[in-house]
Structures are given as C-alpha cells and as structure tokens.
Image (cartoon, rainbow, N blue to C red; front, top):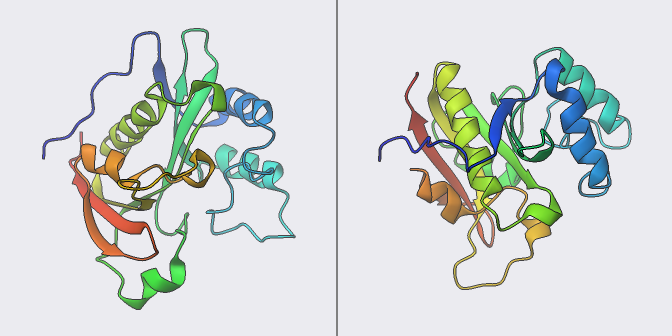
Length: 196
C-alpha cells in the first residue's frame, strides 16, 4: 500500500515534539491530569523506572536531549489536542514484552508506542492525523520498518482509556499489516516507510 501521509484536517497542523514545543505538549498533559494517572507518556521509555523516575522531569529531559519523539496535533489556536509517540527500539519498549520476545519479528527501525487524544476531542480524527504526522516524521528521518502493538476492536466494545496504542484497524488503514497476536486482542503490526 502506498504511504498515506495526507495533510491534516482543516485548521489542524502537526509539529514534532521538541524543546520549542515542550510547553504546548506539557499544557495538553496537564489539561488531562497528567495522562492516565500521571504517566506523562513516559512508561514506554527505556530509562523509566516505576516508583523511582519522576515522569514529568524525565520526559522533559528526554525531549530536550532529543531522545523523545512524537507528532503533536495542534488545533487552529495552537493548542495541542493529541500526539503519536514514536522512537527507536533502543528508546522505547512495547507492552506485551514477554510474549513479543517469544518469537520476535524482524528488528524494526522505529516503534510507535502511544497515541493520545484529549478527551474532549476524541472521535474527530486527531489520532489519524497524529499517526500520519508520525509516519511523515519517520519518513523524514530516513524511514524504515515501523512496528507497534495495538488492540483490535472489531466485534467488541473497547473503552477508549485502554486504547492508548490506538487500534489495529487504524494502523491497517495506514498500510500496517498484522504479524502475530501477543495478547487477547493485541497484535504486532508493521509496515515499511520510505525515506522522504
């Protein structure tokens, strides 16, 4: 399937997470009570140590050092409404690690570990825009094999708070293919992204 890297919805833009966009990202996280109980989208970072690391401080340090990546979706007023976190396998670990390691797929160049949308803006295509933005940023960084572990939702009702890795169906709409099931509803999905 060809790359599906279309422009964001009217009024929205995609910006990379970095020192210049830290404040916009931090405002979104604070507006959403720290995200999932204060995780600050840090739980997948290899450096994170549960009970020892202070999530906000570690996340900001990694962003300022260029070791935390995400596509931020900004609305027409410049407020972030969502993101798609990605990074190298050295930077990010995936959920279902034990099952993943039993029969690991070919080593990916990139991982997508978290997709988050402000609760007041869900169902408006923000996750789609964020994923498209992350794929475009990955293409700009040289492309390569991209993997994620996501949840399938067909035939079941899944609460949005458990879909922080987006849905298999969204990934499939962007050219990802299912590899192997690693949880009750969780699949490894992957695709190659051409360099831009």
